[in-house]
Amino acid sequence: MDGKSKKSSLIFILIMFMCLQWYAVRLFHVETGLLLGTLLPGICIFSSAFVLSWAAELAQFYIPQSMAMAFLALVAVLPEYAVDMYFTWTAGKVPEYISYASANMTGGNRLLVGFGWAFIVFFYWLKTRKKEIILDQSHKIEISVLSVATVYSFLLPLKGNLTLLDTFVLLGIFAYYITKISKLGIKEPELENSTVEFISKLKSLPRGIITFALFIFAGFSIFISAKPFAEGLLSIGSATGIDKYILVQWIAPLASESPELITALIFILKGQATSSFRIVISSKINQWTLLVGMLPLVYSISSGKIVPMLLDARQVEELLLTSAQSLFALLIISDMKFSLKEGVILFFLFITQVFFTSTEARLLYACFYLVLSGIMFFKMRKKHG
Image (tube, rainbow, N blue to C red; front, side, top):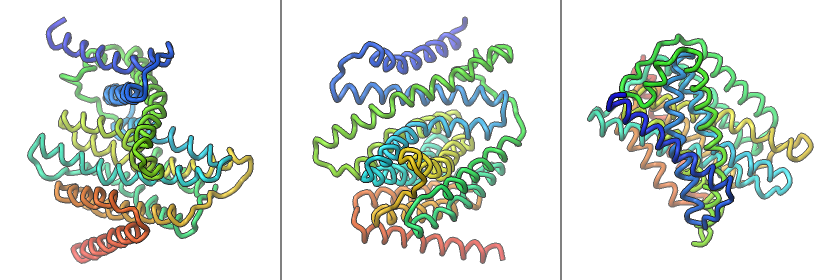
């Protein structure tokens, strides 16, 4: 085994160990205390992101790259699903938990776009000194699907509830997305200098088994780590007297969104900007269709009857703001480019709204996003005649 192979093997073993430490803590019921009990599952989530990136690389031998990235994005947002489904299931029995379910969903969506997309273009600039990511033509599928989902999302705050009709529509949009990207061609990946290069050289069957096992292992590791990590952060935050709604909306998603952001960063560092951006835009589609669509379904099952999830005034405002941000971000990338300047604008509008939680501030930001979207839309129409 040469030096490069030894280094790759050591990295592989180290990352797997960083995941397995949390399995050991859970298996042997080790008393960790609040701080360590938050840090250790956080390390497991962080390490699982590396495992996911390896599995996605290997999966490209068998399925289209876009499909591999979409599946990676889906597995990476499992923590977000786990936390939100917990709140939604509980809301079926304790109605006040509905606000926590919507808080986590809207916070996760806005964090992914306002911070995640900006995060990707910023690190792309740091690595290449290029101020613009040129999207692949295959990204038009994601953009068109996200367009439909975003337009539909504006109906939710207007209705003031989430119903099984929304489940049917949003899950249908997600199914269409998966069907479209599954039809793209398969291109054998180049895994030279990759940590999993030694796995890529195996025969098809054992390589396929290992690829599947890595996906399952990483997904399960994230799943068992997400809740204790999020709850640990909430417990730490609660000791400071911070409002629980704010903690659920921002701190929990910050933990649960980390896998796809870390994985996207790994692809940026490998010089695969389009794959990196596909991960975050696929995550947005997952959250805006599958996640939102599952909420009324899980709520009805938990309630034991078909009932709508009624949204209060704050939840309506949060949904409107999230839809407006989604529309603005969508128009930004509609020209198949995403620049550092656009990333800075998205980040600035996101980070400033975190500190203003009044009704007036939410409505003002929503209106500002919509005005900017209107300006961009008319400029685009004028440009294209």
